[in-house]
Image (cartoon, rainbow, N blue to C red):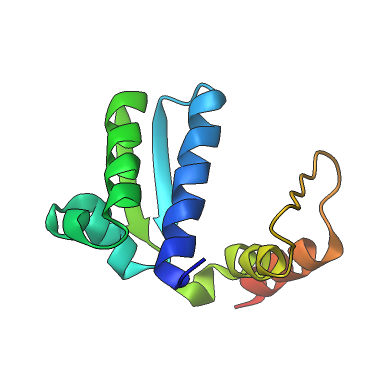
Length: 117
């Protein structure tokens, strides 16, 4: 990824696709990126270098769901997502990891730390 904004945008697009495949009709998307939330809510970012990703996010949200809300979640309240992003950043580009049973210990630790704050 070129930068954090691209990573956040691609993660949001991936989450939108998963929610759509699961048959969700209403979604609440949380991001710690104020820039991404603003980009999804406005036309300003459509001409940026990542404008095509932002436009795809907007399109998928518009055609795929009856109700959409995109909100900011401070990173301090988003430790699990931050931990997962850190894990993903360490994967090779051809790797994909899915957990269908018990979650890995680092996810449980992040979750526990979030509750403690």
